[in-house]
Each structure stands twice: as structure tokens, then as C-alpha cells.
Length: 73
Image (cartoon, rainbow, N blue to C red; front, side, top):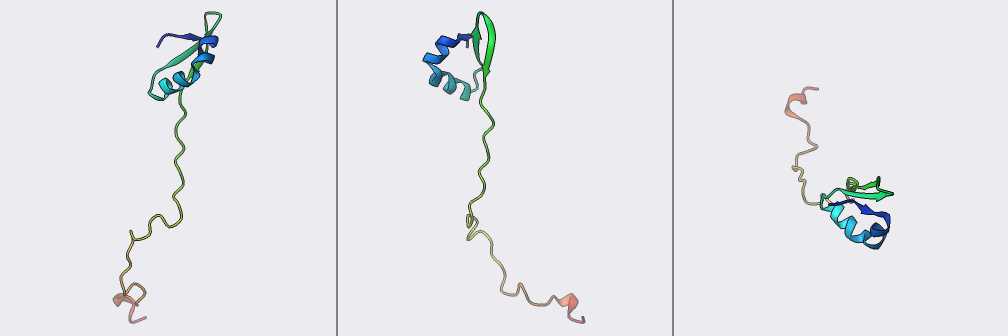
């Protein structure tokens, strides 16, 4: 994409943000000099919700029974 001036960027900021999110490099100029480079930030990974793994893990019925190797102790 060609560089845009601050005035042009103010008029179509939403379009420029969409373009940056698609991976385009957006350069905003002032007085024919590069002023700002618009790039997306890395997305924040959401924290897992409490209980989101419900039903994914199963415990055997004898989970808390003594192990064969330790019966002598």
C-alpha cells in the first residue's frame, strides 16, 4: 500500500486498520516523511475457563487403591 498522509488516515482509519490486520504494511506520513507505521499487535491468549475440561479426563475406580509394589510397606 502507498503511504498515506495524516489527513487521509483520519478519514479512513477503519479501512487502514482492517488492511493492517490482513497483513498489509500501513505507513502514515507527515511532511513527506515517514511518521507512523501501523501494525497489529499479537493477540492475547485467553485464559481457560474454569470447568472447560469437564468430561475430558477420566479416573479409574481403583485410582486411590494401594499399589501392588508397595503392599509390603
